[in-house]
Image 1 (cartoon, rainbow, N blue to C red):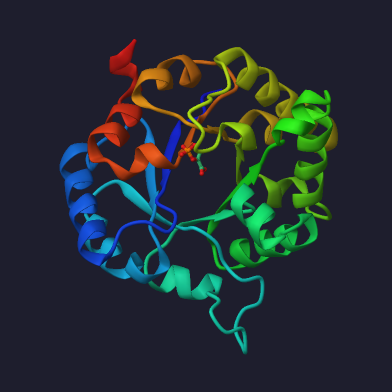
Image 2 (image 1 turned 60 degrees about the vertical axis):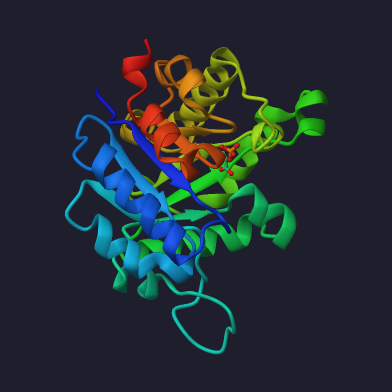
Amino acid sequence: MTRKKLIAGNWKMNLTLSEAMDLAEELVRRIGSVTDVDTAIAPNFTVLYPISEIISKSNIKLSGQNLHEEQKGAFTGETSAKMLTAVGAQMVIIGHSERRKIYGEGDVLINRKITAALAEGLVPIVCVGEDLSQREAGRAEDIVKAQVEGAFSGMDAKTISRTVLAYEPVWAIGTGKTATPDQAQDMHRCIRELLLNSYDKNVANNMRILYGGSVTPDNAHGLMTQPDIDGALVGGASLKADSFEGIVKYQAGA
Ligand code: PEP
């Protein structure tokens, strides 16, 4: 079975309209026709539509960084799944550790957001990962397993197979401390085993599990060539066209 790699850039709360448009144009030039891996970018909500127009004729997909779990209504400051698809988004990041930690999002809410995204045809990129104290206490696998089970609670195998997982150890996000390829592979294998035991072989074999946490062009090859790592969710290095290109083209860095 082959799982096509997905390299997704999370721009977070960075880049004004003109900066974002410049970066998107540069990315179209550099990686817009790449087909051996899937690529996606998740710009801030305010620039989704112009970026959608810029990348529309390229292979780069558009992702939201978050969404609200309800379809519409009196939720000041929030964005629905339908609003994302209306501007061309095909994916949405859900449960990023910054949302969990800063905004207190938990598994029940994340589960509802996944349902809302799938109902509109968005591919959720569901983030899980332990923090440093949990890893040091030897609880990393239990924490990640509980997050995966919580995110997918009540969903059947067919539903789950429409999602992407991203394992992002919190201690590696934006810190420059990357998990070693072996550390990351161990957790990815553990997640795949969980999918096999809790759901079925198809889900386990076909689910793309991305790694995220200080991925750069220098470490991408080592990580991406692990058997259970199916791509990367990239923060800081996605804000520069050359470094994102270097990760997308990690095979050249062999
Ligand atoms: C992220 O925030 O998802 C992330 C992986 O960030 P960075 O690549 O900067 O560690």
